[in-house]
Image 1 (spheres, rainbow, N blue to C red):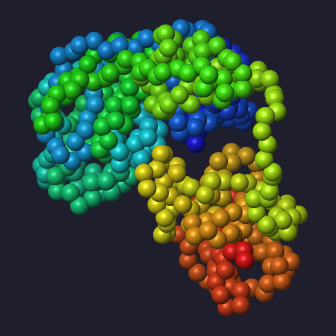
Image 2 (cartoon, rainbow, N blue to C red; image 1 turned 90 degrees about the vertical axis):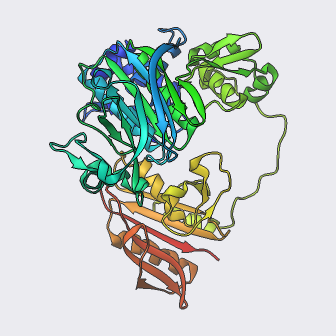
Image 3 (cartoon, one colour; image 1 turned 120 degrees about the vertical axis):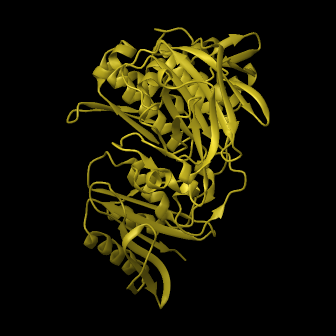
Length: 504
């Protein structure tokens, strides 16, 4: 879940609506929002399937179309005489565009940088899939080269530095070098962008140069590049960025990419089409909803097809279109009905006593998925072959990972917090896990003592290690390790203690 925060004053010019109206509209389009009186900011939560909403401009676009203040989007790219030559087989894909006439301000530059950061960290898997850069067109000379150069041959002044640095220095000392340097670890020849005058524009995917890779409120013409290992994601991320700039009154021009594999031009901003099945939609929604309502979600209707905009990367099939139709209709506008089928219910697990124990101690039950993102796991795990999304790429080896995510999602809520879950992990065994935030170790130990007493267990704690804990002890029962208790490594306010134990 991506969280954006901004002041209403910064977005009101874009949405042309009151703050209260905005707070009411956003949840209707699937973007929960709240206003914090202390910080005077709005906080919105955006699901990973809608990266086009990772900015104020993207949110304003959706709100205005949804409320009828703006017609469905029209994006296009004109032919341009801009060319990039690719001379690398490492992270060999690049997609580019030029946008002119952009109206920027200090706040809009910040918004664009937030979009860049969120796209690279989520869709780009923290730079592993792609990196993204924005460059003032006036500071670079075409044609450009996307090429490899030996470490000792790379020297430029990166963004945020007062001096030039070598590639080695930038990777070891620069903030972005420390964050993304692992992607280039062990390589002698590194990917860079160079203009026709030989100026290094960026060390990819690490950092742009201060000389020709910094945009500000006075920049009106922008060169955008998205480069990495996944051609499809590079193109999709470029479309999101370009549509963002086009909504700031920018005019888009194509850039020709020449590589050993041939020539391509980007961006492709034409709408994509999908066959519409009215009967399928009615079956899913339970009633007939006019497909014309999809225009509220920035669709266009064309005979037996519906067309969605280039910035929507989450439309994989008709079911996604039907979901948008439900949002456009309004979930509160559906008439509740009973299904014409039934099934005999049964308990999910046989641990009612354990549930009662933990609920009685004030813990709130949560239910999370057994599948998770492998990037979060710090120990041995079972990987899912060909996962549909990164969020379902591994089977959790422990409930601790799931409960940790629950605390992170609720980090803006008040303290103390107490959650628990009883569920299965990767080998099929059942475990109970509970955690507290904003309370001391004595609270988590007291819960363990009560739980063990009611189960008839005598346990011991022995100092141990766990990749997610900075203080940790293993729980042994009858000399056999049965669980773990520890303090979570986290920057969240208040200490977070967690305990997990195997149920038999």
